[in-house]
Image (cartoon, rainbow, N blue to C red; front, side):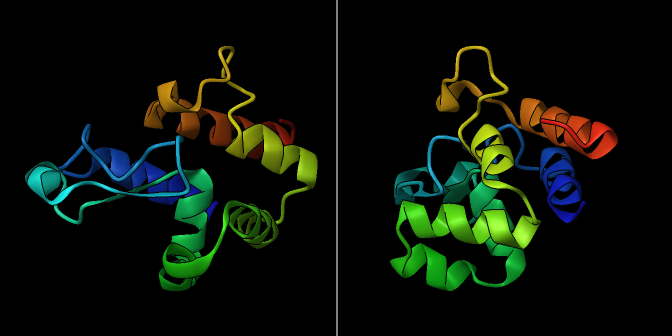
Length: 119
């Protein structure tokens, strides 16, 4: 799965653990003062990264709302509504606290879905 491979690459990137991954927001800008810790100054969740991979990232960052981001990422990844809610809203995390979901946990959940076909 392209999204899983992309997130694994991000995990191995030189900037990790301060990467462009955060489940708390589809897209987030890191203030200019913090750009030295992450060169591009942006962060995204799994759905946000799916949109960026699709080639629609620039439009999404500028004008899409959370409903459109959810729908676009769900459709691009070929997920059902239930699968997308489980993945994008962090229902695989016992606390359901999006900000506490690590990149490792996200990759583990994607691996589980790829291997079993289940959420």
